[in-house]
Amino acid sequence: MKGSVALDRKSGTNTLGRALDILFALSEANGTLSVSEIAEKVNIPESSTYRFLQTLEKNGIVERRGKNQIGLGLRILDLARSLNQQIHRELLSLALPIMINLMESTQETSLLFVRTGNDAVCIQHVKGRGLIQFVIENGRRLPLHQGASGKSILAFENEKTIEQVLANITNDRNRSELIDSLKAVKEQGFACTEGEYDPDVFAIGAPVVDSHGLVVASLSIAGPLFRGTKERIPKMIDSVMESSKHLSNLLGGG
Image (cartoon, rainbow, N blue to C red; front, side, top):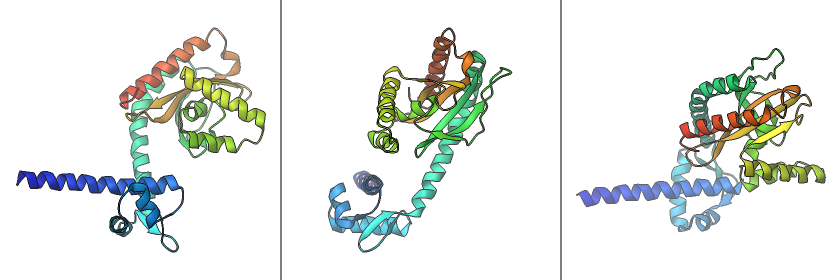
């Protein structure tokens, strides 16, 4: 009896694993695949692939598009949106006290950004103490390749994402400078920019990592350029790095 239960559990785990393999294959295809192509990618017989796809289609996880073409279904978007909201809620609740401390230690506006496509989106900010300060609203989008907040995410993304961003930069010199800049950010673990998105603003950002080692956000500060002096920058870099590491540790990363 115990052996039967163990066998059933193992079978269930294998079934779930195969279903996930199919979803990953469709996701990486960035479009549709035929049943035979899916079977080849996940290394299971076509007959088994059909059965998995029927179950997934019944639940709206995949859908048929054209003759013998399979793509991800709309239901997967609902699941992704729900998971994204859950992650953001957890991230925000953990980040806010750290952001307040970061603002207090640097006196500059602290920012939390996440990636959406080729943009970085501000999902939380804590205003600085100065009479002149960097101001931004939650939900503001900035190009992923400009500014410390975006670069400290982009530098740690996969090659495909980086290539997509580079493809949108037509100037060869700008593209080369971005490649060198992202390489430096990855090596040193933070981004520091001056007047890159706004000519009057400096910013320092560092990645926030989850338990899987993936960059889920960036934690940064930004302020008027005249306060980004050589004397202040090193201490502010240390504060940003310590804060991002603290948040990463709370998320199980770091």
